[in-house]
Length: 458
Image 1 (tube, helix red, strand yellow):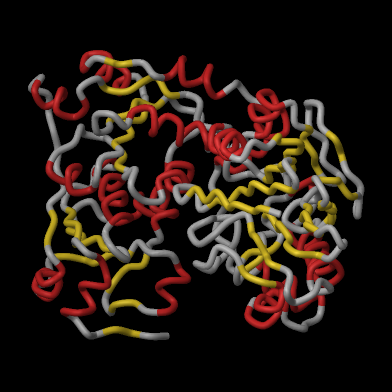
Image 2 (image 1 turned 60 degrees about the horizontal axis):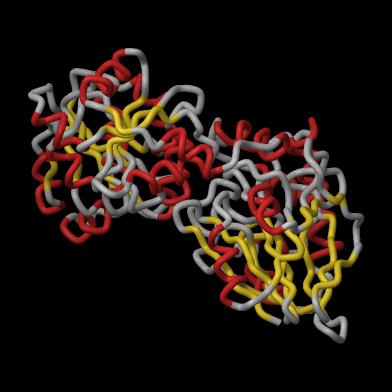
């Protein structure tokens, strides 16, 4: 028995390769099939099954492309109704993989078709469970995506039964392999660990503690952030199917001139700058949205970019394919191309450029104490509830497109987050909306706290 987790940090998503006696299964693959084909080829194994835990909302699954290249059967759990050929399994149905078996456990709650896959060894003993978005480390899947026209209360009730009847009844020793880790918007506050055990989760996960159905529903539906708009588009793509990735890349890997980029911007295209925040701060094309490729690129791109509007990519040389592939993973298939020569080509052409002033954390107190600046903390509510600085506005980055409209354009703002990645994104959004007097604080709250100990803990 061989299990390998393929973790895509940009998506905070985990897929899995499982192998027994030369036969392999893949669970929840990302859009490009290469990682799984490479593992199978290295191990001289045949991919027999592709198991989907549900219709994903946060990324486009690679099950169709992988099946096309391997002839592996695509398997969904009960209630799934894909628009392409797939095997719809029953609850407790088992699939033979070498001398092991994989059992389908229908666990509705995150969605109506959500299921988990229980891996049993040659002696039929349960060894590991692949929980998709039903159970995470420290959290459970959010029940508010209105799957199958069900309300979040109805889905929350289903999730209560799924956890109590299918998950908590398993032996404590069973390894839990979830579909996501910290940073995913599919739960409220996922743990940083990428796997656990049933016993550990029964001890530490709030959702697995003894409580009534109504108490559970209240807990899992309370204070849920607004789901990114692209979630509903991606879920639809995963149901109806999509264009092959290799065809999409051929279509979108187009080098655009400065003149073509300017024309595209003037016609309403979104300029996506994926360079490091330090490079962006020193100079960028006006109205660009900065989302650094080195951080949680995909979730923030999905949260802040309009999936229906065309995109022009501005990136560092050599990363063009990587950016476009990552956008394709989350269903953004309207990329016009990339600026040939990057930002440097734009600057050399003599067009207008903008920049973001930055200060070090040591200067934060001086700027704030002079009374000319208002500080904005762009971290999530769950972060600011643990610790926050006095005299700050708290506007989570996910809410910036709407909340920024209410900011006073005549005021000056200091932006910070945990480390600097999100605050630079926020700065680009404010600039785009015409709020010009902004400064980004390098290093974020960690460095500020070292210089300004006035920390409030609610």
